[in-house]
Each structure stands twice: as structure tokens, then as C-alpha cells.
Length: 113
Length: 112
Image (cartoon, rainbow over all chains, first blue to last red; front, side, top):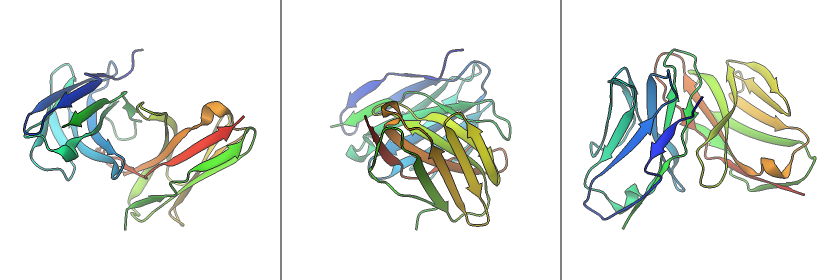
């Protein structure tokens, strides 16, 4: 079974631009969560989508948004990029029930210059 | 104070050693506990997943959870150079939300 895939793998953007990242979960998984990983803050939860609905949201500004499609694929968008948004963005998928494990993709490394 | 504390290391051990990695936490609502391994420039890989207190063994890996002390551990027996990576503990509350709270990670190097 294929794992979680994320595209693109690497991205360089300029301050003020916006960016869209994509995540395809494991087949059959309906929950997709997004995390930001930086050397200073570690892994921090952004939001989770289940059946096209945002189910939970972390403590990030409104510039960070996401959505999920009917095939469970998810996108996250960051508008008005700041230098501090440079990070590894990871998505994780799970079946969506109470106790299932989450499996991470390889991440998208975003560099903002 | 962070909800989950993890010694960042770095930790360096000789091949074949037993490695002990630990995390403490403050949120008594955490019910699910995980250990992830992350190689450089890769996504985290799930190693162990446990619910509530107790031990779980999988090959060379043993996870322990002591909810009374708010303390979890991962033991790696017969460590190999291929185990060199950053190890992250993660935990979450019961319920439908998937939000994981992570430790800062421990960087482990196993020397041949």
C-alpha cells in the first residue's frame, strides 16, 4: 500500500507571496493532519481535516488555511509569507477513528527568502 | 513550561548498547503515546503506539508508559548504526481529535 505523498518536496518563495502544498493520504484514510516543523519550535499541529471538515485547529494565524477534497486529498495554503514560515510542513493520515495511528509523509520543505 | 519535555541529547552510544529515551508530560488527559523515528530530511516514521499505562514490545524496541508518574520511555536493545536518527515522543488526548503534542526530539548516534 502506498504511503502518504506530499508535493512539492521543495519550494522556495519570496516574502509576501502565497503557497499551496498538497497531501495525498494512504488509501482508505479519511483524516489528514498538518504539522509545521522548525528547529526552534519542533513539530507543531496546524489543523486536521476529516470528511472535508476541519475538525481541530492549532494556534497559528489565519494566514494558514487548509481544505480537504472528497477523495480525502488535502491542501494547505499560506498567504502573505513571512521569513518565519520557512519550515518542513508535514502531513499525517489516519483512518479517522478514535484510536488509529497517524502516518507521516516525507514533508514539503518551504524556504521563504 | 512545555506540555511534553524530552532531553534533546545528543546521545552517542556504541553498537550493541541498550538505549533509553524518555519523555515527561504534564497533561493528565493524554491517553495515547507514540514514538516516532525521524531520519535527516525525512518525515517521522511511527515506531511504537501504546494506549494508557503499560509496556509494549516490538522486536528490539520496548515502549513503557507510567501514567502515574507522567513518564514514558523507549528502550532499544542491541542498537545498530542504522538506528541513528532523531527520536520523537508524541501523545494525544482521547476523543476524535487527532492533534499530537510532540517532544523536542532526542538525536541518537550509534557508533560502529
